[in-house]
Every structure is written in structure tokens, then in C-alpha cells.
Length: 167
Image (cartoon, rainbow, N blue to C red; front, side):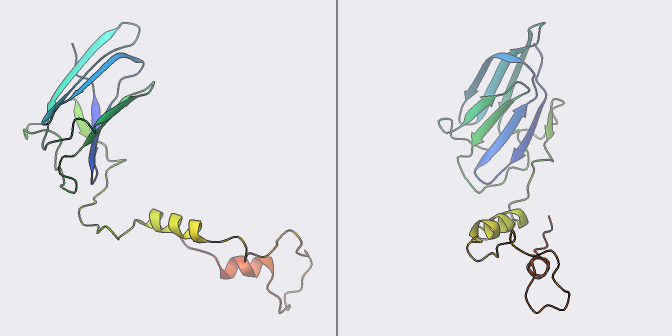
């Protein structure tokens, strides 16, 4: 048996572990309070994988779940103590050669307050709150308006109401 390669990341209420196993079958995930086990078979050669992880903190086994895709198995471990940061996935500080941090999904949420939204969340909230009733009808605008016109053209509207977004 081999250990499956995995990436993990921390969130406020959960820890996510993504086992990178393509075409998995016979997937079994067992959640306990302080550890979890993952096993499966993969590929045409029916390679067997097994990982057992003693966790840094406790989880809620009943609220923890997993989801299989063609390329991986994602495990969502619901923290027993939401809001407590996990500096590592494992109880021991020893490095596991099969485990790495998923920096594409990592977010430093510790310093964020509950009210503090990310730039993307702020942008999404703003876009959702914008009503469509007060927007001008741009379909009927004439193409040959003079530059001296006091009327607000569709281009002036867009220029004056543009939103600059930084991520």
C-alpha cells in the first residue's frame, strides 16, 4: 500500500484535505475525534492507497464529509473548536512526505474580523446590491452625440460610475 499525495488548507470552521488520486474506487473515509483514515484503489493497475492522520486538533466526526471526483477525493473536516487556527494538519511536527499545504486555497483568516470582508466579497456584495432600475437604457442611445452635449452619454455614465477592483 502507498500513501496518497494530499494537499491541505485551513478555514475558520473546517480543515480541507484533498487527496490527489485519479480514477479512485472503493473510497473509504473514517472520521474519528482526533484522527481520520483514508483508503482507496486507483487506476487500471488497481493501486491501493492508505493514509492515517493523527490530527492537530479535534474534529466533529458526524459533521465531517468527503466528496469524490475523477481527479481527487476532498475531505472536509469540521473543527470541534471553530475559529481556532491549525498551524499544521498533523499532531506531530514531523513532516510527512505525502502532505503539502494547498497555497492556492490558503487564506490567513486569523487576523480578519467577522465583519471584515475580502475584496472579492466586498465587490460581490456591491454588485448584488446594485439595482437595475436606475441604469439608463443604453440600447437607444444615439451614436453621433456631440462631445459638447450636456446630456450624460452612455460613455460618460460608464466613465463616471466605473468601479476599480483590486484583488
